[in-house]
Image (tube, rainbow, N blue to C red; front, side, top):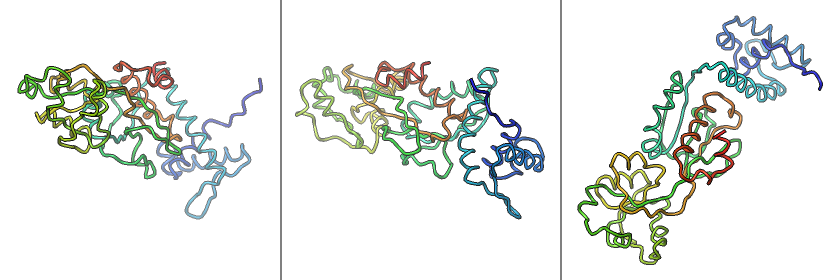
Amino acid sequence: MAHRKLPPFPALRAFEAAARLGSFKQAAEELCVTPSAISHQVRTLEAWLDRALFLRGVRQVEMTEQGRSYLAQLTPILDMLDASTRAVSGQSFSGKLRLKMTEGFSKRWLIPRLPRFLAAYPDVDVSIETGLPPIDFRNGALDLIVHWGDDPVPGVIVEPFMSSTRVPVCSAAFLQANPDLRSPEDLLRKTLIRDEVADGWREWFALIDRAPDCPASGPIFAHCELTMSAAENDLGVALGYKAMITTSLDAGDLVAPFALESPTRTIYSVAYEEARSTEPVIVAFRDWLFETSLRESDVADTFDPVMQRAAQ
């Protein structure tokens, strides 16, 4: 086996910090050294490589094309080394984790489980915003996006982590006020709450061979969180994604009058930039997301390759 050809590690750290931060001064602050020490280490690395990594002007420095290429490969390696070292030594890590997701996922799934993540990573500051944005990391304001579906995006890793069946749900008060709701066919005569995004009532009635009779009426809401809220407020019966509403069912905010469930489908994926896939905070949240979803899922085999990786 050939000997590894490795440059001096202090020089690597100095270059990576200066290139990543775009400033010798900021790199010096991060590494607790002087700017002149950063400059000296970068020159040491350039001499070792026999390549210029920065173009030095009067008041600023700019990376060369080779410097940019080296940085793109070096940062993930150092991130992975940092994560591995912390894991072996049992050390925690700190940082800000910036997430974006749908309101429904945040309220129904993440927030009830978030204390477990925060307990495992007490030094991570989590920032959550909600909405239905495209998967866009260009402004650098987000670390991960939890979104509906699993369409591929160039330069982004998109991994489906949650699948679910759908089951009719309503409030306990609605069920008590409708004592004639005793069989699935009885739903044909009740108020059905509809979801503008992938309304699934016809598919559900097909399970009892009544798809042609599926009512076309009923209040329509923009997304599943609004339909669940409407059901909790006694408006009628909605189709809930079972994986999303286990907490609401356990608390009695929603009840499922029938156990009949529609076929399983992919509902949520997590997305993050491929170039940042080894950053410790991103890895920690991604793995926690998969492990938690897998532990709670009755249909883990749906995402066999991905789920098996998460379980290892």
